[in-house]
Image 1 (tube, rainbow, N blue to C red):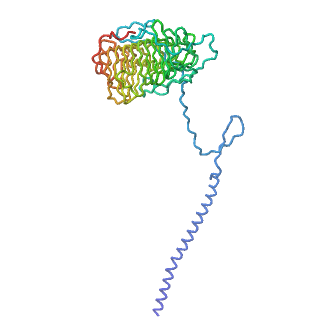
Image 2: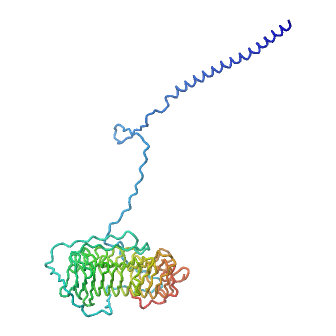
Image 3: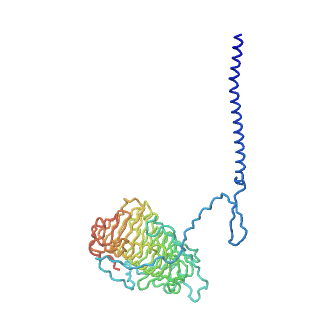
Amino acid sequence: MSTSNDHSDRQRDDMITLRVPRGALTALWTLGSLIALLLVALAFIAGLALRPALPAAAPVQVPVIVDPAPVAPSIVTLSASPLPLPVTPAPPTSAPTSEPAVQPTLELIRPTEAPAIPAPTDAAPVIPAPTGVDADPPAAVDFRIEPQPAAVQPPAAPVQAAAQPPPAARPADSGGGGASRPAPTTRPPVHALRGNVRWLTANSPVIIQNDLLVSSGASLIIEPGVEVQIGKGASLVIDGSIVALATPDRPVRFTQIGGGDDPRLRWESIIGRAGSVIDLRNVLITGGGGGGTVLAMQSGRLSLQSARIVNNGGHIRVEDSFVIIRDSEISGNRMPYGSAIDITLTRGGGGSPGSDVVIINNRILNNALVAGTAPLRVTNLSFERPARIEIEQNLLVGAAGPNLALFTNAQLMGNIRCNTLIGGANGLSLRSDAPPNLSPMLNIRDNAIEAHEPPNNPFYRQFNIGKGATSDLPLTMTNNWWEVANGPYEPALNPEGRGEAAGPNIAFQPWLQTRPACAPSF
């Protein structure tokens, strides 16, 4: 009986224990369901409220007003195309001109202690006759060409040669690679001389209307007193040789037709080509240089003695040739590029014992040059072969550049003596692309270095100290006159000097305390 009662009590206790957890679970499940329904309802309501604010799928369009007038706006669809790159305009290029950009000025600036130099006169210098000129006339030649009288000249107008533009590379005398100027261009000559030809005084003037060629192997001899008149744009081209052995009282004249020097009627050039010989003594060359060069020689021999090169539109250019210019005047010319005498050796010197360049007793002044160029420039572009030069007793008057410009990559030998370097920005300028330990074997002495522009520095301007010489290489310049007795100004070696300044790399001690008598006066 008791066992049955215990069993009944145990079942009742189990039922009570199970009944309590079931009620709690039911309550929790009911509460969770209510919360879930509430959350769903809130999400649905929130979705309805936010749906109108969503962006449309169509691309964005903005109205752009094209004209301020009251018209309907145009609709432009924006896209992600890249912006165009800015275009940099090309720098303007100046048209080639036959006139120099800078006119020469001869306002010579003297240091405070220097004596005054007498002002130049308008009288042309007396050019001495060359020594050793054979006075006997040349031997008879095979035939001669007699020009037609001026009255029966053919009416055809001469062909105008195209002007040569200046080169785009190196600024003159600035030490830029020393590139040579372009060779003068010539058209096929309309007439060629062959054999031995003599132009006689009795047939003067000889008139050249168009280009004339002296053929290879031919020689042209011009007697004293002959006047050669050349038409506008025409050239005398030399493949053989031309010789004019005139006298001071009977010079040979190269001029315009009619004998003038009108810039509008300039003839072109006397051009010596490879293997040619030009030997001109006691000549006047005027009214030429229409393309920038009045006398040119390339890979030949040029001898110019007791000559006057005046009132032309171009310079003298020599390339890879033996050249001698002495006792001559080059003045009053307007040069659109290059130096008054511009000599370039692309392969160095000729290797013979004599000098490759001989420039003696010349007056180069009053020429209109481009700023930075020199009256005389000699360039040796070779890195292997040296060159020999003789530059003595010349009057070199500058305007806005050096008086004597040298450029060399190989050894430079010879003499630079008894010259007057006056006016302009600098006296002697030596530039080079060679290693800085190359020392030219030049004898530079007895030169008068005077009246150059002071640098833009208060100290230099206070004492009117100009630039007497500059050099890229070690250079010996002893026994020269630097305009005052106490020598050139050099901050470290001669700070009390008030003469023309000597730049770095230049050994100038001792200097001359009086002006050398062998240097020509201005």
